[in-house]
Length: 295
Figure 1 (cartoon, rainbow, N blue to C red):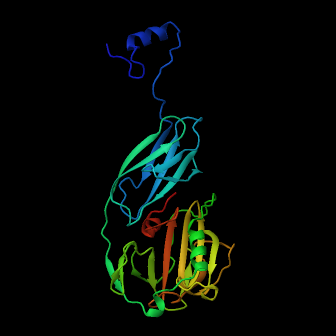
Figure 2 (cartoon, rainbow, N blue to C red; figure 1 turned 180 degrees about the vertical axis):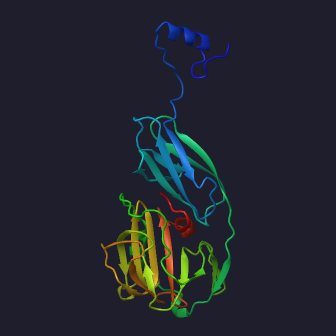
Figure 3 (tube, helix red, strand yellow; figure 1 turned 60 degrees about the vertical axis):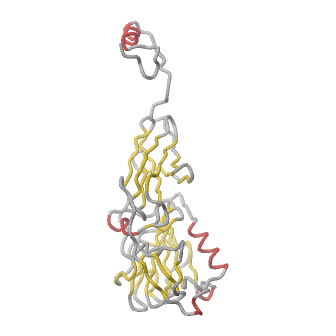
C-alpha cells in the first residue's frame, strides 16, 4: 500500500477510514505553494526585461518578495486581478545561462530556473576629440545616479511605449565600443540613438513625471541637456544631447507629448537623441517595450 508522501505514517486506506469516521487528520510536511507564477518572456535573452507575476492561490497569501540568484531583490507591486508583479532587468553585462528566480511569501517558496540566452552585440569604434574625453561634473553624475535609482509606487505607463523620435535609428541597444582605439570593458550602449536634424521634436515614450532636468549651463557636460521621466515602479526614461527642453521637473507628461528637441550637446558626434530605458537601475532593451509592452 502506497504511503502518504506528506506523512509517511499514514496510508491512503487509513486516511479514507479516518475521513469516513469523521476524524480530522493533520498532514505534516511542506506547506502548500501559495502562488502560481507567470514569466514573460519565458525564454529571455540578454537585455530583456522579465515580468514575474505571482498569482495567489489563497486569500491569505501576502505580497511576495522576488529575488534572483539569491543576490538581488526586486520590488513587487500589486496589479489587477489580485496579483503581484516584479520586473527583473537583464543587460549585455550579465552572464548568459541559468538564473534562479525565487518568489518568497506565504507558504512554500517558488523556485524557477530560467535559461538566459546569449545575444551577439555589434562593436563600434568612436573617436572623440580631447575636449570630449574627460567630460562630466560631480553634480551631473550625482543627479543622474539619483534619478536612475528612483522607484515610485505609482505606475504611470500603460501598454506599449512609443518611439520618441521619427529619426532613423543610428545606434542599436547593447553595442560595444572602442573609444579612441581602447575597448571600453564594462561599457555597452545603454539605449537607442535616433539621428535627425537639430530642433526635431522629442516626445515622451510613455506617461510619467519629469524627475530630472539638467542643462549644460548647470554642469551637464557629458549628457548635455537632459530630461529624465519617471514612468513609475522602477521604470525610467532618460533623454540626452537635447538642443531644447520644454518641460520642468514635476510636470506630468503623456505619451507622444513633445518634451524637447534633438541636439548635439554633451559628448556627441552629431545631432541625435539618445533614449535610455532603465528598469530598477539597469538599462534594458527598449525594443520589447515598444513591440509588446508589459501590462
